[in-house]
Image (cartoon, rainbow, N blue to C red; front, top):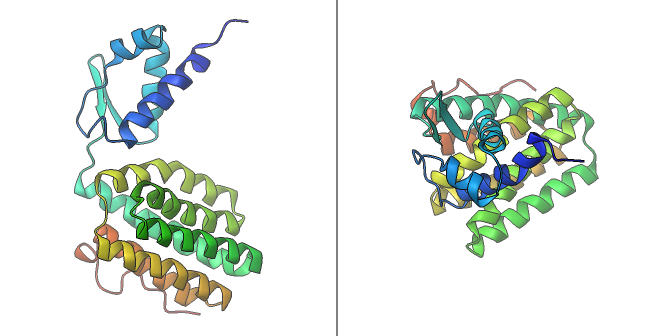
Length: 222
C-alpha cells in the first residue's frame, strides 16, 4: 500500500525539527523546501505538510505563496508564553496537591535532580529537555486532560525559546533549586508555597517582573 502524504511528511518533519533544535537553522532562516524534497526523494507536498505542522507548533512562520522561515519570537510573544506558563503551572500545582501521590512527587524529585546533574555536567541540551519534562510531569499529575493538552501544545515553543535564549548559569542553578523546592512544597501539601515558588521560577526566566506589578501573580490564599 503506498504511503500517504502524511506518512511521507514525518521524516521531513523530524529532519527539520532536528535542524532547528540543533541550531543548524537559525531564527529567520528560510527553509530549503526544494532541497529537502530532493534529499528525501519526495514531492514538495509532504515537505509543506511538515512545515505546516512545525508552524502550528510555533517553530516556523509561513509566508503564503512565498516561503517558510524559522520563527523569530518578539519580546511580546515571549512574555505572552511566560504568562500562560504561569497560569498553567500554578493550576497544575493546585491540582497536584489534591490528586498527586508520594510516588508522583518522588518521580518529580528524580527529574529535578537529573536536571541539576545535567547542568553540572554541562549537558545543556539534556538539561533543557529535563526542565520541560519536569513541568510536563507536573501537569500529568494534575490528571486534567485539557491542562495536559495545553501544556503539550506549548512544549515545543518552550524548548525552542530555551534553545535560542538559554538562561545564564546563575538562573539555571537557581531554577534547579526551585524545582526541588516545588517538590518539597508539594510533599508538604502546601499549594500556596509551591505556586509562589513556580511563579518566581518562571518570572525570572521570562523577565515578567518588567511587565507586571510585583504582586500580580502571587497566590496568597491557602
